[in-house]
Length: 208
View 1: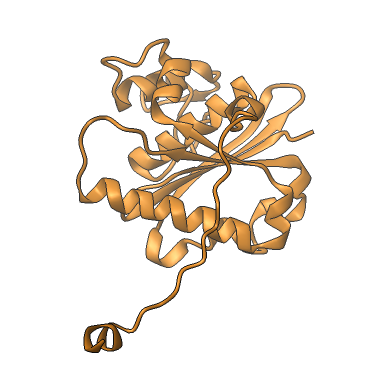
View 2: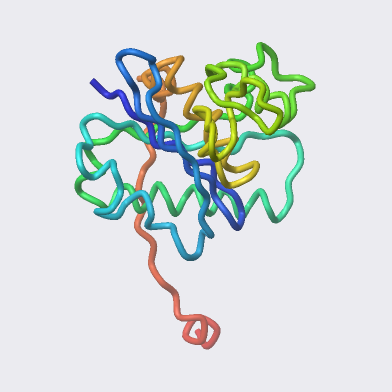
């Protein structure tokens, strides 16, 4: 049974990563997020230091993917490149072939966590996540909190990485609650054909 989730929120320069380990008693036993600089840490989830490496049959890898909002910019294209690099590397690492990789749209995450898509911003997703976890920690005022402080941490105290960290947690929570199978491509989806290309020498081509 695949109980654990490695969720990645890719960005143009930095990506957020969430490790979510399931617990039979509480549903979610451990949550931690971080973020990496893409050009330095693209190999992070693939190294033998990754917790996925220890028991790949218990893990699912989820990546938030890009969808068409009718606008584009350099950050969109750079994020697409990050997603492509991740998927390509996943194909090249033998043990990762035993781990399902699913792509999830931001709108699917908002719909599941907030109940609707329109008007929902990052702050609404963050609050929906906080409301999902028990308030077993204490904040600076001594009140119960799902985040807490260093001395009285809650289950979300280890959420780091700013907006990318919370986005990765939202992705992990959505996949955990909906089931990763929901995000597999439909059986009739067209296959991606790997077409070989021929490198062209520009000088030779120009001379011809």
